[in-house]
Length: 262
Length: 306
Image (cartoon, rainbow over the protein chains, first blue to last red):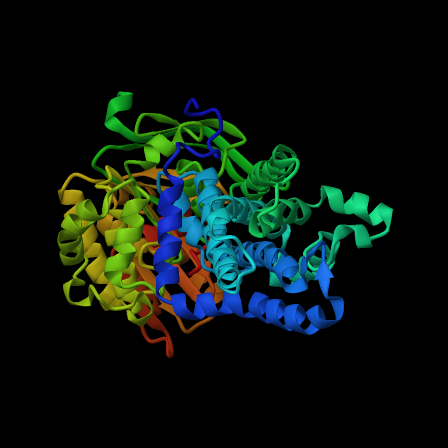
């Protein structure tokens, strides 16, 4: 890309890594607490719902309910980890801690920073999603070799939800607004996207809504992999997720520019 | 001056935020190796100007060139050779001093090994040798400022941009920063600083530009500005009614300004002024050489508020 095409787009293919590295260094200091925080919620859901509800539900789509649920929890934990990292930690670095302001005085561009934050949030999603995946695999609810397909799908899920949350923080005046995104977007998405029960349980109109939601595409990629089933429409799901990752990146970068560099 | 000897050139720069003009038809240039001051009260547009020079704010009109690069289009290339000390410290509070340098060096694509090699000399420069492993949150205000200064040097910049470098520091910490900045100037660095602190400007700046509401109202070397606008001693009188005093000393002064409860008399014969007021109880007089504060008062009709 020619220098000067846009002073806010990523300057090159590697500048973002400096931002990632800064976040890694900060995370390393609180790694144990951070990992526990990321895992507690999906583990509770997996065992609580999986064993508790599983007794009543019995088998779903020909597998034990907890095995069905495991893929949903892997996708959901990736979504939650990436979203919360972006909403709270990235917002702090962008706004209150002035970390971005310091970085903008170096040779990094705004796009380099946003990209670095996205990759970092996705890294935390990979950590959370893979941990749940591993627990599921140890319990026999996932096929070990399928980790080769599952991890890229988890990573893509992380980028997507970090990217979407980036729009939220680019617009939000303060932390107080994040709760609307959590309650009105994320929680419904868990129930609409086949994470905890099969999509065909939903009325057909809601199934159409679900078919465009990003978490549904993540679940459709991760569940067949974990259960060792052939996955359909991989290209469609990957393309949809890529759109959800890329468009918000450009949109949020443009909004950040208005906010920080007017 | 040719472009290659200029570190910064602004020509006809204008910026408005929401209809309010913040920088108005501003032109000035900074030669390589000099310390140039932007002097003015809060709200004069100083911070906006520094942000425009860094490419973080785009001017509505006018041209900006920094280290040979047009800004903001190629500001990133200019920033490779710029070090910034912002008005508010934005260090990583949970990182150690050493980690702060490491993280910041990475933003300039330096490897961990390169940064480690640079760290001892930067810590020595900032007088923070014994603090390398201390968390920044535990440092004093003066130490944080010095670390910010060391951090700004990690890319060996040609140009340093400092927004109010000593605001909020105690006198001892301030003098230490000034001494460090003089060392940098001796090494040939260019410094652009904003300040509302007259002593700072007089001590450090080879030239300065006085701003009021985004407009340049005076430019030159500090002593030349003082000579041109004042050129005589000042007697400050307080403790009486300034209006009454005006009438009494008026015939013996070149010029007077009233600011708050103080009357400033600019007189080439200060003894006459003192003689007129002898015997008046409750008055306090201070005679002193003129300074930039007087220049500012003279050209704007008001004092610089802190």
